[in-house]
Length: 338
Image (tube, rainbow, N blue to C red):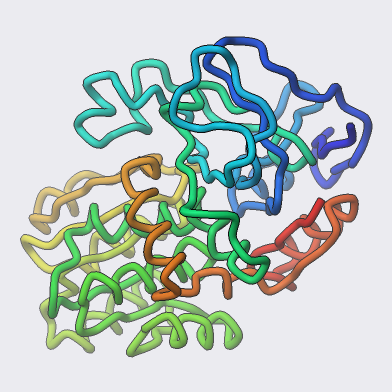
């Protein structure tokens, strides 16, 4: 089998790798239908997140179950399944409280940019779809594995309510699907912060009512102008930089909430603004497993179309171009077909 391996900054290869096999009774092997490149994959690709050795890549996945271990009870060969990027048993106290990304037996998925994938804790991680999906549904179903699930968590953590005003910091795939999520949760105003015309168009398609092109202090000033000096009820922080977090904090009204899902890099949080702005902070790795059944239903019934966020589709063996396109901002998100 061949799969994606990152050797170092800018060095992605599609090369021979050992095919996955059942290692524990709780494992499943799935044949990947579609996978993709994630914005978080760009951190090690750019050398910002260091890797010590060649690293198999990919954590977003869906496909057909090929084989299951002897202890697996809830999925079976032939089913189409979707799993979270966080592997969880779904039975520990943290999982039962809806935080599968804090599972006491947590693992993070990797190796999904390949034709086949081993999924540990299959019963706790995988959820089958009602039937084998049509090809046109695959992109949207794939988003549930991470970017839609993460955008949904950002909106949920930010306490988005019917009729509320929401600001979204970040115009990558997660931020754009955060816009979609806020729209689904009933937000009346959704202010997307973006400098890129193409991404602004996507944001409007997903439900943004206004666009702010400014960043930093200027971006905060613009949000305050749009909200009569009050600030947004809910802010989704979908970047993970110190600047984006401070922009989110200062754009939130007193008593408002921030859902932060951007993986932090080089961030040192200045606490006085948090203290004096009276904001709530909640976030981290998204507990996607909590949302899988509901999000599958929304996609399956074609009530949402998050798969539009994939604006580049490539064969899996051209994965290196997928990374380059996203790194150079020629693509928002790259879909890969084995």
